[in-house]
Length: 329
Image: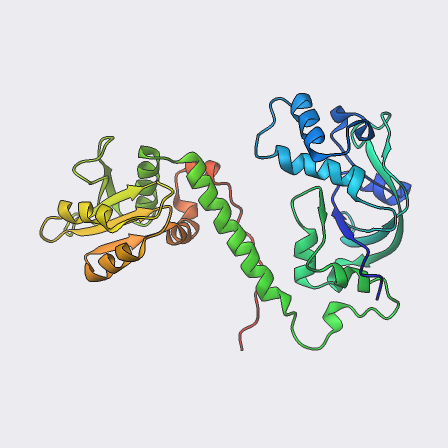
């Protein structure tokens, strides 16, 4: 096993030829110029980035400046780097051999470091958890959870993961991580794009995808009623209240919905957040009212996603994929 005090970095690129044939790792942001001319602290890097890219999204600035700073200053000679190449489905493991370089003659990937590739290993020899970690969407990142597995792969007696007795124990964990990441993404997009009346319109469309006929009340609601839904032409009527607030729901808010119910009605309270303890108790004591929190709402969105209006699919872009899951006993 290799020296575990060495750090392991993961990196992605669109120019695999540069990495493999020239034994370089490189990142873009050519407009930033020579990173070594920026004061060696994150604050200076961020100030330079904001000056260079004034239209950059605020949420992306710390992430991207962090990658630039790490590439220039935190990566050290002797650190290891893992580069998954898509063209041949190999995992390339190397050692950083050079300090930061700036090559203005490169068309895009001007920030460079020399690397000596030590081994090129088929992806199938690694656990699903390790592959998931180096499949991160970031250009440059530190490999933490499965660093030891990649370092072990440099040993002569490294055994491929498919050769280990028993099932891949990382499969179940990896599947759960992917699912949870997807749910987090959906909920963040709902919070970012849908507030107030816009969320009511979305919930109405989701109920339609589930087979309900819906009518959205005028903005401001109708005495606590945001949406009225029917499964068909016959009762019962379902009275829906929707809340986009970030704070958890109190019992008093659900009281307003209960007051809007007529004989034979059922209530549905939908929130992007959660319910406080007293609100949960109130729902248990009033079975005519169903409460759906943010997590349950996302589950319904994923289940009926294909039947949502196209504008909502564009707002929450998802792709149907198959992921490996743990085998059942």
